[in-house]
Image (tube, rainbow, N blue to C red):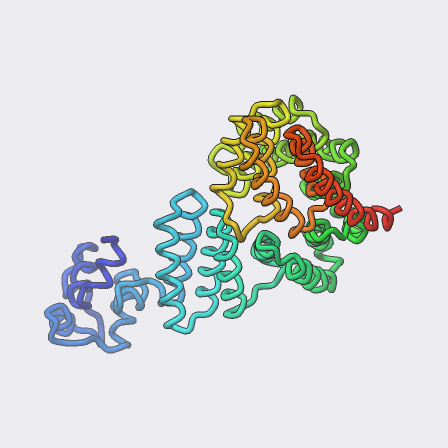
Amino acid sequence: MGRDERAANEPIGVRLKRLRTDRGLSQRDLAEPGVSYAYISRIEAGTRQPSVKALRKLATRLGVTTEYLETGRDIDDVEQRELRLADALLALRFGDSPQAEAELERLFDEAIKAGDKAVAAQARIALALAADDRGDHAGAVAGLEQAFELERPSPLERSDAFATLGRAYGALGHTEREIALYEECLEEVSRLRGEHSALEARYRIYLSYALSDAGRFGRAEEVLHEALADSEAIDDRHMRVRIYWSLARLSEMEGNSMVALRHARKAIALLEATEDDLQRARAHLLAAWIMNSAHDPQGAHKQLERAERLFSDAASVDDIAILHVEQARMHALLGEGEPACNMARQAIALVDDNQHGAVLGSAHWALGEGLALQGDHAESDEAFSRGVDLLEQNHRWREAAEACRAWARVLRESGRREDALDVLERSADFALRLAPEQSARQ
């Protein structure tokens, strides 16, 4: 039991005597006009409750607050909750997640009962961010929406919460809700453009991600160029990294791997000058995705080794799932069926069926290739079918087209030419869906 907890459980007379003796004072030494030693004796014996006036005088003489002398606490209940919240957030940051989350749940319940919406909302936001980091995007959405109903923070102050909510919407396939959220944040931040232009650029980058995920590449590039036009954002190293990262991702989704890799290398070069190992790892993972798509498994292998080394213990469930997907794709390109299947299955085990459909789609695609290399054509067919369906549902037209071409090759090799033609027709359909957006940019 901590000192403050012991003090809070003490009767006031016991606390008064303890404080007095700790300071080497007798009852007569502590007495003063209006508070006689006999009065102090009765308080310590528990036969008298001190008046407010007496509490003030005694607290001053003892060098403590009136609050502490009366209750054993130096701060009121609201301040106590805020202090506990700060401690729990610190514990969460340093990896003590189970205990910190349990304390945050207790704080949330207590704050709700006390009508303390501010602490309740902050506790729920922290729990939602932790859920998202575990890959529980549905839990993150539910928690953040509940927190925002209690007390909606400003997107100027909690960009982390709004970014997480947007990403979680995207992971659940609610891309239009993600786009609407970022547009709403951008509108609010834009009203204060002079003071918050760097933050405005950050929301534009988030919006470009959502737009590209929705297949709206022309608008995504427009938004990125608006971010590039912001001189304050360009002067910020981390903002330049985000912009290059976004341009790399957009270029790759459009099928321009050379341009994508150029942007990815610029992002990596800027990150090398920082100590942000997590973001460096993610940049190398992005480069591996581009290289795999360009059929360069050796190049992807080097990037994946660097990413895995840098991730250490800081990687989220999503990071690890994507790492395994790209490792599976790399092994498949190298003709290594068993490790391709192992990595793909590890990724599938990490990602929920209802979350991150695009990642799950790529994992099933890689699994299909690995199974085909092992000669298991029936299961390969099923994995390819599942992967293509998921990629289509998530508007990942280029990847869906590539998966179909790989699937058609496997079907041809197994003598199923008719089925291969059907799958190639589907690939052509995906390419046609991609073409209007590419034309819109020219």
